[in-house]
Amino acid sequence: MCPLGSLQLKTKPKVMVVDDSATNLTVAKNALSNVYNVLPVASGQMALALLPKSMPSLILLDIDMPEMDGFETIRRIKENEATRNIPVIFLTAKDDGGSELEGLRLGAVDYVTKPFSVPLLIQRVDLHIALIEQKRELQGFNDNLSRMVDEKTRTIEELQHAIIHALSDLIECRDGLTGGHVARTQRYLRHMVDGLMDTAFYQDELEGYDLDLMVASAQLHDIGKVGIPDEILKKPGRLTAAEFEVIKTHPLVGEKALKGAMAMTSSQDFLSYAATVAVSHHEKWDGTGYPHGLKGRNIPLIGRLMAIADVYDALVSERPYKKAFSHRRATNIIISESGKHFDPLLIEVFQKQEVAFEASRQLVT
Image (tube, rainbow, N blue to C red; front, side, top):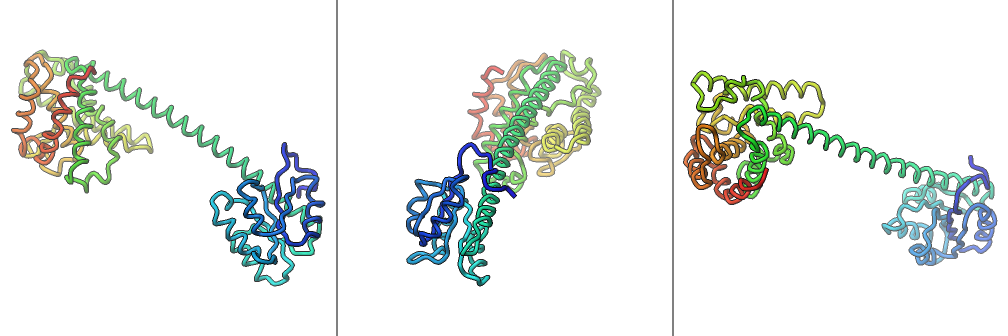
């Protein structure tokens, strides 16, 4: 145990001694003042009045005092947010265990029986002051560790974002026809999600979604195009039926690649969203889409949302086989496909968000 005078602290910890006996206050002050800044207080009322202005590291509190006893005093100390964490050691002349147990129940950390042994008093105070210092050091260590973890997490997230962005750029570079498609469709998907949140539609499905992660995952919706031969992917003109069948495999290629990545990490949420949107964004509400011919709500919500964003961008963008359509023409085409290509409820959302779509279309990617 830490002997008197052995605590090497830059400043003396403050110890408040609360006792109606002047003798006890003098004994405690003489015993502790070599190591601690001792503040003698003659009553519980006075202690409560002094606490906001003179916060001690530790309180030695007598139980038997007139007007306000130690039990009432500690209750008020523990009720105050500013003082509740100050350790309290009871000083008691009682020899019954009930008073000691009541004090501990009210939040005291220890007790010393009066008339107290000076060495024992010093030892108990040294012990709890040492615990306070250790707790403070541990809290500082935890705070530093938390900051380090936060910084490392931010670094990893920034790296992940950079890799995903580079990968999406690579996909567009291979395609050669859809520059800015990834960034635009991600913005459109965000508009759809925001609009959906303002309705009562599909709240049961939305409950389990991390919406920010879901929107971010949309960057990889066309990752499967890396598996499509260049002569088909970059063909300057309309595809033959056979070539289109090859194109229709890209959702499965993307899903397979992303599920393979999922198997190599325990952090799978982002990749799970990405795999789902990759495989489902070409499905159609009436079941005529690909690759699985899913119908209605069997199509994952993220796929139904992405279908609208993806088709809108295809319509308003120039292709070798067509000019870019106007926003109004593209909007009319999409609305006409309600209940066929697209979820009718999501078309309602799209109609409310079409101004945001048009504004995003005009942004520089």
